[in-house]
Amino acid sequence: MKNDTLLVSRIILLGDRKAFNQLVEFYQSPIRRFFLNLTNGDEELSKDLAQETFIKAWLNISSFRAASQFSTWLYRIAYNSFYDHARSKKNASNFESIENINKEIYTESTNRDINMDFTRALAILKEDERVIMLLYYMEDLTIDKISKIMAYPSGTIKSHLYRGKKKIADYLKDSGYDR
Image (cartoon, rainbow, N blue to C red; front, side, top):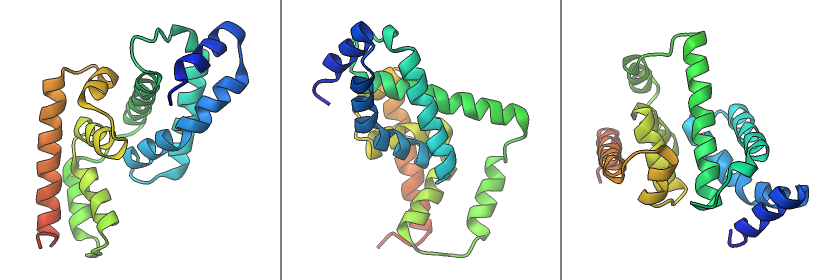
């Protein structure tokens, strides 16, 4: 959004809730989509995480320094919210191991719907690979922006993209999409 900085300034200086609502309206769908893909389609959790992200953004808006774009700052909050949730879930109960996820994927019916297979392919990626793939391909963010969001060097982002693409390509090829 071109006038993010102006809206943020109005929020910080004047406490303008309408300006914040404009930012929420603009970024709500992309943030929810980001979480929907990270949570393997869990709509309720995606909505909760998006709401948490915007609450944190509102509470911490004065810490935005315009060193990066507002969207980068907001995705960084979203990324941290997801990892906070994942850590709390991990502490509350044991996550399924990747082997169990793979067994479940391969033993389910062989539905050839590409959207379902792509969702399954995303599930086999390591969390960092999945986040980077989603930010790059689904949210159309640059490597530099992703690097700022995740606080990783650009080379690490590129490596994760390469490995993620290879894993997804191999999975889809094994699922019969090599034609």
